[in-house]
Image (cartoon, rainbow, N blue to C red; front, top):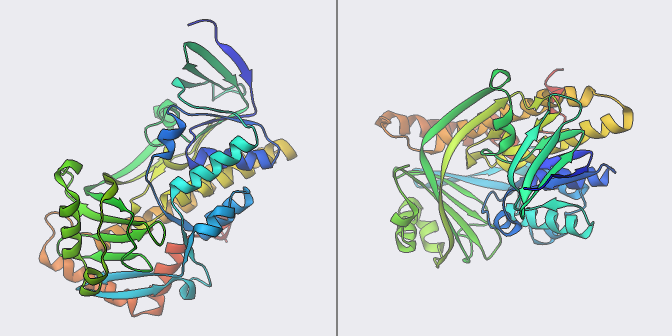
Length: 404
């Protein structure tokens, strides 16, 4: 390698997923310069099939970033969700029991594409396929990031590093082990997901507690469906033909669902393991972790992308305060604010996962306990409010409210 080419920015963002792209867009709107460094290609980033449920807070943040036009045109507003057990469905009116809040069905891939296009239109710098990315001196006032690309080495000096590079990224791995605590629960099953260009089986999401295991009927649009089956961790995608998937889904559905189910060839099929994971703290000197770099939630509660967007909002506010007001109060408080929301969302996702899935070695009485709790929740105004308020998401100022 030749001598590194050196440049400078205010904020170096490692990771060009939705967290990094949203942070870059919000900083741009605030007049703060940022460069994004990503280890894979733009096409690879866009090829990731991920979450599809946006909380109102996330919708508002995408509007603030100036990328909400297509979301409002193509996204589906859902004011409720259905829970099913014992072959019976019970609707939770999210709008009624959350004080008028809804969720938006709009895939993470679409969010990423909108943010990519906005960044390109603004002529902002994103480096894709950066190899050997490393973060340096983030415990000083002069951090920097290095990487290799096309036979050349590069160095980017900056004021701050935003680690938006996911669970396996370099930023969290670079934090000193003595300064970090990691909490983790790995679940003994995964979700087998199938994406198909078929109309959804229901207008709203259906969460299914079945003797054969959990299932979720979700969607990306009125013509594209996303379905999930709980499967053992020992299973592989190759074990499941499309026909086998549809047959198993039928067995977990009720009569109405089986009648309305439209099958078709899969566009994508994958198995995702489930884990609850939180890093404390989320700040290490002048490096901050956001999104999956700092926490993972089971997808049951639809919180992963939404926690990433609010991390980014807190971080953007803190950086704006630093540059505009010469104050470090926001960056000093970043971890506390984020973790207040994160642990509440982690708890809800863990609780809903426990409630809707069948665990190996569960006794018969466990299913009875689940059904009794579901029956109570869906026939109690307090229970319905608990589900609705958590599902639509906590307000951005939750950290302040929780101290009152």
